[in-house]
Length: 133
Image (cartoon, rainbow, N blue to C red; front, side):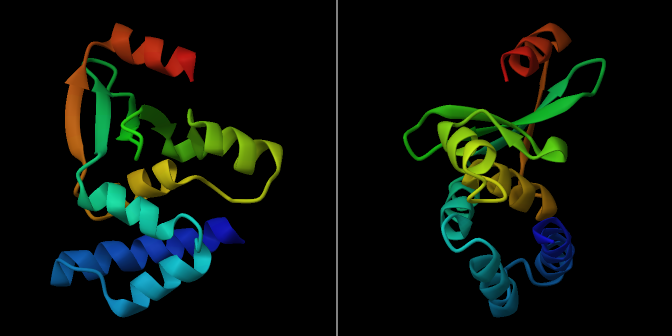
């Protein structure tokens, strides 16, 4: 259910941001309602340009690199809802308390608003990142 609501939110967010270049109160309320613990933290990461999409030079495979609040880089695979951070492993995978972590949410939000910095890297480097995830 959360996944469907998140997809609707991202669709609204994409349209709203494209038309107004800002987030409506409705989108912000929905974000806060769906993700009360991580929504604002995810927006903060987006606002501070902490999200980067890493793209393999020839394969065009990708993952997201998000610099966390502790300045630690975390790697996210948004299509699989996965992050390398400890919070994801603990509160999403282990305890099933949350649907996702703030890093994945930040990558999703940044991507939907077309605010993500894209950086092409060698395929071998991307493969190593994905292998370590």
